[in-house]
Image (cartoon, rainbow, N blue to C red; front, side):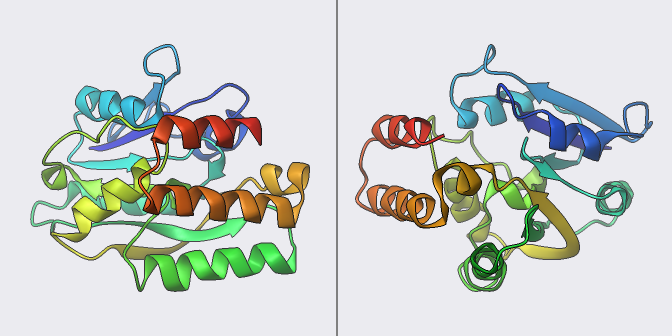
Length: 208
């Protein structure tokens, strides 16, 4: 079985719902939305979703990303293999708007962060074998996907599957390309300096 966990947020429901059309009653798929009523931070919601799931393969589906049916069918097939290797990874990143700068961000995310550094952000839609989960995610408010990647990369390198996770560019459209890029770089710097995740998350939400 494939378990699809979605850490839903207010106003973020459209894209992931399109991904799941036609899979609601699939015998080899369970869909587990976890709302902010169940967990404040995304890490907490992902932990809850994992423990609710039954599947041998899990998909942490970003609420503002869309996956084509072929991507989900590929994961279903993987989940049903009795001799399945212990694998994890994500899908090719692409924004839902065409812009040269957004294309560069997606290229960097795919070619450098993913392939060279082994860091898979949630908007790649992270999938993983249940056997990789050794302990719950630390309850932090941001960069929980980086922590997950660091844990999994100790065991195996991520697989980049050849389907596109189409991600909303709403923050870049609302705040502007330059401002949102500076915000993102500040957040990464704060994470590397080990600033409190609650502070970084509060800053992130102000720019939402």
